[in-house]
Length: 452
Image (tube, rainbow, N blue to C red; front, side, top):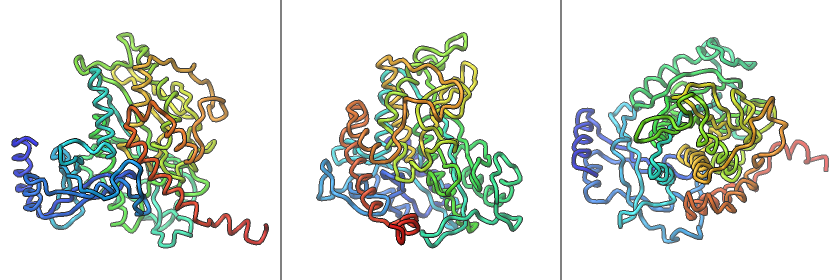
């Protein structure tokens, strides 16, 4: 860490009278783990390398259980937190001035912890940089609002808006339906502005009480940080208004699921030009190879962008979610959509990732698939005409076990993302599936209890 960046951070902390700092590390599920400490102790810890957490936080499942790993030390050694001071922000919902800083994780010899999701994304971006390329992303993040639910056996219900009524039908793009929750969204925008989270448009999506937030395009690591912080922000904001905000891929029965569509383009670092379109505005061979890479490798990477059992409930026909990785222009039934655009904004929209995915891992997975397609010079299929839901070929895994099996067998993804990372991710997700498999569902009690 440079003395200049540390000096700027100290000035910023003093100017904002920050008394406490949250040091955040995203785990495999994208949950914020870390420590809260007084500002003075935070400053001292940076100089003395005393800001630590056990490496086993990356072996923690979404249920909170710790697992054993074939590739990580069972003695749970400490690793050092390296605060990214460029990612320091205020936490605007606290009364006491508090800051938050996203941390990288390193070993005592200074080497990065390769299984950390933020490091996995850094590794992928380094591959691009070595080729003189800079990927640009713009995520679109969907989520549902729900009435507080204290009994997980009961279905969710849409929250009551300011009219005193719940949504009873789908209100796609309805302004009035969004206005039902204006006080909450006003707080959301204020909190995001305070944290320098660059959200753009807000729309009502196709599901009941479903909302989509679009982020302004930019650097992939910065956008992953923003999505990571936004999820926490909207959950905190909603709770202040006695509402739940959920990024489950499929929280409501008979409603569409929630995605995290990722728009992706590619800039030449030296010239600043978009490499996906030529001077005549036509798609370049590099762009076609990028699409081909997504087609070839995304089924193998599906567990990384659909990481939960619930993720696959979203991928059903006629619910505005892709079932394959066909591609086409201006077609929302395919997995890979090419929006109509000029030369400078030529991009592909990856519609496969779910809102429940860890943004660092999802961005890394999508970008590495395109990267492999470009360096291998792959060619895509012909663009799809018409509705793609019933088209054959290029199918995605339909359940988490199939997706995890494909990931574990993919030598290309293991080489690119790191064999240890893939192994640990696999182990965590298998443990989560084992826990899920022990749960008896309401469907089983309803249909099997007295019938079989």
